Structures are given as structure tokens and as C-alpha cells.
Length: 237
Image 1: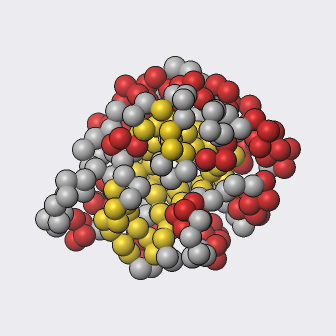
Image 2: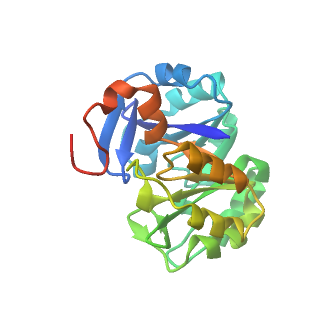
């Protein structure tokens, strides 16, 4: 299954390169949602919440969840926040950095989360930068790999969102071998993200039993006018 991504910043839909440089900005999230009407699920990430900035996109997220099944992430740092996201209609709440400590898995938080929110409502985001789990907006890396983390995280969630950060936002392809290595360590559903660009890559992920969360590549197809003479990740504009 292909899952389009709606990333929110300052009440707008954005696409960032490597989680930093803003490449695309669209003012109306509902217009973007309508463009993705043929897809059964949407992934919604509140980047302002994730980054701890002052903007509040909660009402937009609630509106999106009322109109379409949405997986929602960004800034879910407490059990109360996870409960609120689910109560607001999210199909699943995506927990990221809070699932980890500076050394590895944050079992205390995850046990608390498991007691407060049904396991089937939780996805854990496990992102990789230069071979290691990356947290806090991909600013910090941990001394563990994603393949080491997934088996430990299985008791707390119904699946994983795994991002290959090294390829994210560049429209230059992803690393199928890396995703294959993750499939070997867990039977839970995995949603793959990060640099997925071609139909062949989507098909390869489907053969691994994985969904594909698409950002830049799907916006290039749906909103081609924003990609004329612009090359993400190359410094050109």
C-alpha cells in the first residue's frame, strides 16, 4: 500500500529535504488531502509539535482525521498525548524519539504507554542515519541499529515506521537492502519511508510485505508545477 505523507508546519503542508531545508509549501491541507483521495490511508506528521515550536496544528490534524483514516505523529512525548491523538480520531499514533533513551530503548515509557493505549493503536518510528537509530529530529544518533531495536520494541506496538534518512527528500532512490535487513528481524508490519522514488522500489517493498510512505516523490506527481527546474538535495532551484 502507498501512503501519502502530509507534513504540517505553521498550518501549511511542507516537504523538507533531510528534515531541514524547506523545498515545498502548500497553504491548504484540505486541498492536499483531496488530491490524495484515492489512497486508503494518510500519514500526518505535525512537524511543529515534533520540533517543539509554538505553532498549534491540532485542529487541522483533527479535521484531517475526521475526513480520512490517518496515522498521526509528531511530538508524542507522553501517554496523555498519545491518548489525545487517538481520541481525536487517529487510526494510529506514531511514537518516535520518546521510545528511546540516549543509550537505547526506553522500556519504562513504553510500558506506561502500553498500559494506557491499545497496542494496535501504536506505531513506533525507528529511523536510521548512517546506520544508527536517529532521534530528536534526526539530530542525535544512538549506539544501536534499527535491526537491533525492532525486536526489543515489538511488545509495545502493532508495527513500525522505518525511515532511511540518508535518502530522504532527495528523489534519488532508497536502500532496499536496508529494508530487507529489517524484514529479517521482525514479522510486524513495516511502513518504509525515505527516498522511495520509483514504481520498482514500491514493488520491491511490497514483495517484502511493506507499505511505502511517500513524500517528495508523490508530491512531484500530484503537484508537478512545484518541481519545474528544481532538484531536491542538489542545492539547485
